[in-house]
Each structure stands twice: as structure tokens, then as C-alpha cells.
Length: 555
Image 1: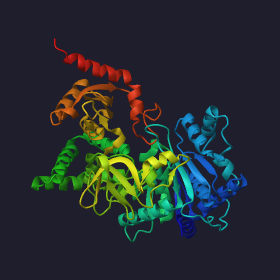
Image 2: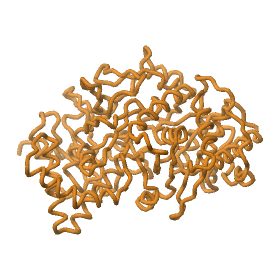
Image 3: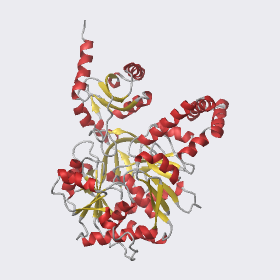
Image 4: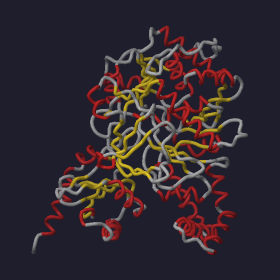
């Protein structure tokens, strides 16, 4: 039985049990297995009537929705290759991706999305809205059809990479990739959930078009779970309280925001709660560093009785864990949630690895590490500390880009471009991104991420930090957010005194405007477009270096 046949079987075993839910303006709209299969049947019928067949591409451009999931499953069940696209991406970028994969049909969440792309690409293929697919089929009963026979090598989706440098590439994921990965995720989730639990309660706000988010959707459909979909990012806090989940998937940005929000609220309250909280935080960090004693135990016991339970209840009374991926998570943030009694499980992977290479084992979490390789996957450290991976999770190649595929798949190993290290127990730590290395004119190679993370940790007002210096004699930083120049100078002085000369940051530029998807400086899933940032700030970077050189001249 492949992953898709398992999903259909699960849905038929959940005829009256809620499977997918979405929250619309505070109201919980629930769909049981029978209703979801009815939507899938309606979508399959529509796709076939539109003339699509196995191997055709169908672009799916819409925000998260139960209907999104139904179209996705329906297309895969007919062997149609789904191309999920990010609804918030610029229309010209979306048009470029669709020109690359040549879809036979575009399914849009609303007319605004359809019309936005049509304006920049008048030749866009036939586009339909969810309402056109489900207007007659929303009440259709499941007809008992199963997915058409699919081989392990059959492609099911093309997910475009975020394109931190160069044009986005279409990552092809096949049936075999998903067969393996969904078995692995289910095993890990079984470790997290109680054996007596009847179903997982899962909350979800990240766009389904991203690989990790999509894997969670399919994992929930593959096991006894009810997935509650947030449809308004401004209502995450309220919707989270309504869903009361056992776990949910996160990116570091949200967890950092939640941590900062909790700290700010307690500071505003002041009084005894603030005193206990501050002492408990310091005590926990000392205990984690192996410096625990009676004093630490006292403050942690007091906070555990009077402060932490209220915070946990506010985040989610049923939370067994938070799952985090897509980017490195600050160790301090992971420890903060662990202190509250909410473990943060990290996941590492790329779209090309079917989203996952490693996952934290819920029984043994090491802060700052991303867990061991999932079963059946081999990982090793190659040249320049690059992480190499092979196994059934590795994608077959990029869509219509054989040369790009050959560059990254060599001798049976996928070259991730990430740098990492592994301990004796098999637990991995991600160091940085190989292509992000800054090479000074002295020949020194510097991974910018650890230094950027340290600056962010010490500058509460900073939103983002990007180091520059390729081909130059020293490092400089671009810092966004609200930071006083004097504060940055003080922090840099502290950091630099513990660094070798070539890693010292000798200049910085402050920018009130943050790097965002909308201004083209972040990828669709929030990663820094370093080359674009460097180009955008070229004059400011030149001024920084010129000022340091000028100040170094003898009087």
C-alpha cells in the first residue's frame, strides 16, 4: 500500500470523525472523513472533465483551506503532478514558475490571485476558482474510487525552491519519497503521543505550499489526527486557543516572537510574578550549564507552582511539544520553552530531501541540535563540513534541469550545501550554509550565521543581521530594527574581544526597514536573500568600508 492508498483508507475509516477543520472568524468548521472524501471526489471529477491526465501539471495557487487539501489529494490520486505556489509571492515570480512547469490548469483560491498573475502573464493557462470546482460537488458522496496505480518513481509534485540565489528550481518529489518519509514521521509522532490517545490534535498556520508544511498535512491525513487550519495569521493566538492542540509546526520567527511577548507581559505586570520569573530564568540557565544547587531548585519550584502553569495554559493547555524547522532556532529560545515544560523538537531538511533528514527524538532532546537522521537515511560530513545525504527521501531531480541535478547529486550523495557536525550519539548540529561563506581577501573563510545569531541575541531591538565582507579585509554588518548606535558599538566591542582578528566586525549600518518578502529581500519562506541584500545596500556598504579605511589613515 502506498502513502496515497493509506490516506484513502484512513479517510474511509474516519467516516464520522473530524479529520480537517478550519477556523473562519472565530468559528470552527469541521469536515469528517466522509465529507473530505466527497470533496476529493468532486475535485477528481472536475480535473478529469477538464481533460487532465496522468503526468499533466496542475498549479495550486491559494492560501490554506480544506479545499486546498482536497484538490491536492484528488490530483495525486489521478497521477496529476501538483505544483503548489505561495499565495503571497509576487505575480511576476509566480508567472515565472508556471512558465517553467507549463501547467495544464491553474486552481486559484480567489479571483484576485488569478487576476494578479494574468496581468503580468496574459498567456496564463486556463484558471479556475475553488468555487467553480466545488459549487456542485461540495455535497457529493464518496464513490469508493481508489487512487490510480502509481509506481514508486512516479512524480506527484513539483515544489519550487525559495531561490536565495538565482532563479527558483522545481524540485520533483515522487511516490517513493513520500512512502518513506510519511512512515518516518508517523513513527516519530507515535513516540510523542500517548499510546492511549485516540487521535492527534494538530494546529497549522504555515502555508501548505512549503515542503515541511505539506508533509505535516499528509502525515495528519495518514494517521488518526484532526488538523485545524488557521486561515488568518492575525488570529493565530485566538485560533490556537480554540484548537487546543497536542503539537504544531513552527518557524523560529514565531517562537522568538512568543518568547519576547511572554517576557514583555511579565515585565509589564511587575511585582512578585516578575521577581519569581527573572530568578527562575537565571536558575534554569545555570542548571542547564551544570551549576544547579538549592537556590536554583527553590526558584524553579516556585515558578513551577505559581508562574509557569499560567504561561503554559496561555500558549496551549494540551501541548506535548512544539515542532520547529526551516531555519536555525536560537538555543536560548529552545531552552526558554523547555523551562516552561514545553519541549521544542527540531527538524532539519530541504525540499530536495522530501523536507526532512533529521528529527528530534521526543525522548531525548539536546538544545541546539536537530536530532538524529531518520531511519533509512544516511548522512555524513564531506569537504568543508558539508552535509551529504542519501536514501529513499532524496528527490529524483529538478524539473527540466538535468545539469543542475548533476551538480547536486554526485556519486549517490545529495550535497545539501549546509555545514554541520555530528556527535558520537548521532545527533546533528547545523553550523551554517556553505554558499553563505564569506571569504576575506586574507583568504579566511567565515560562516556568518553564528556571528549573526550572537548579535541578534545581544541586541533585543534588532530584527535581522546580515554580515558582509566577501573580498574585503574585514567584516561589516547590516542591522535592521530599532537599535541605538551606542548600544551596537558596546555589543560589538564585547563580542570582538573574544574573536580572532579576522572574525571581528569593524563596521555596521543601521536600517529601520526590515528585510521582508514584500520588498524582495526575503524568500517566500523567510530566508535571507543575501546577494539581493548586498546589491540593494551596495552604496551603504561602500560607505562603511570607506569610512573605516579613512579613519585608519595617519593624521
